Length: 332
Image 1 (cartoon, rainbow, N blue to C red):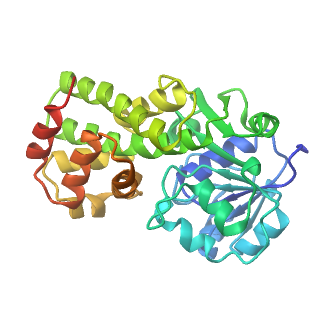
Image 2 (cartoon, rainbow, N blue to C red; image 1 turned 30 degrees about the horizontal axis):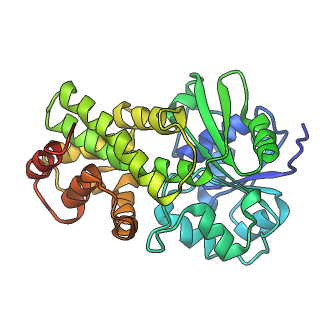
Image 3 (cartoon, helix red, strand yellow; image 1 turned 90 degrees about the vertical axis):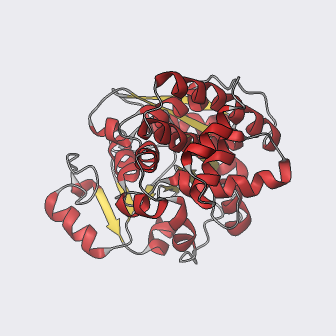
């Protein structure tokens, strides 16, 4: 089945990459799929599913062209869908020597580029010369695990080019997946980063058994904090209660599938930050996001007591009880 955007490639081998592959293969005849490890590719081909993530999702592997050569994939594909955790993003990008300036880039990474403290789209423009109008972002509210279970899933496609956004939306729309179009690329990226920080806070509250009332106050204050920050760093007309902002925050803060919530819950139960990180089988993006956003906010000076509390707990070793008390004093 042909599509108007050409050959699509997924870069990344985790749960989100696997869920997106499942979605895309509904409407794409074939996919290219870059995975770093040849042994993982061999196992995938033998088993018919990702051996490490979403193992219940089976694939017709004859429709997938796997490769561990990122430059080959970047050369042959027209659309590059980035779906690796943000802490490992630069290590993959550093391998690319191919000219990808004319490619369509789709970021499904819900994180900031560590150390550089820039959005994924900004990095791709500055590093590889990709035009902003050729860049898209995918956000939720959507969990990879619910895609695997064929539950109704909602994805927002952000792009400054509405025609391009609609073309890509056609590739992911299906019986169980619904696509919403937005022009707020930067706002969506920042919101996707922040909601992971707030999910850690929600998890800490859950682990400490502070109750639903306190949790509700946290989220109602978190969405206002998100709005203040996003409006400051990426001014635009937006409705913060839209699903890509509030909806994604809610599902990440409350769902049992949320790795950031589960990471926070361990800390709330008394795990050290180091122990909680070691216990996690997958990356809790909010851990890295707390530092990146704190660094960015040192320039903007937005009032962000929830971010400050999470940062204090994760990086300054402030006891969670003390940080939460100080945070709660700002609630309204």
